[in-house]
Length: 155
Image (cartoon, rainbow, N blue to C red; front, top):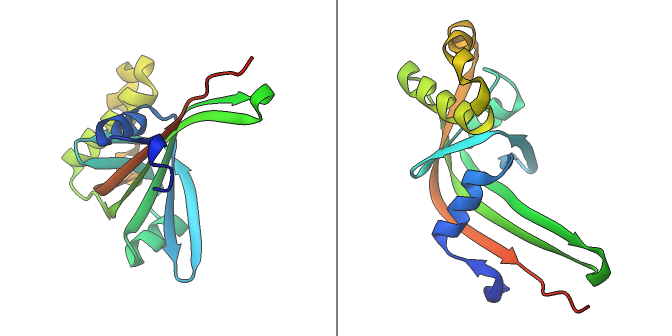
């Protein structure tokens, strides 16, 4: 990282991963990059996301499972300073489809607890309806870095 003064530790970076509203997963489709926003949940050294059973994302990941995940946490535009406060984390890893129904349900529960905690009473019935047509992928985290910028206003 070029700006070492903005680098944050692994635990702080993982906290951003855990709190970001969504993440963007980047992958390589031959010589063309492809990225897509997804809802994620982390469990230890793994990140889960769900998607359709087929499509461009799953096709690419089946050919090349290496990914980079970008997570943005806090942001604040400081117009008078011509700058922005921010925090972000970048994860690299390898994605693989989750085949075991028990692990799929665990991952989907984590995702739903994180993103729709007020609707967990409907989780079991939603799983009954959609588990067979929902893909879940697991990213094994290889590395995580984080960066934070805070500004003290000059006025």
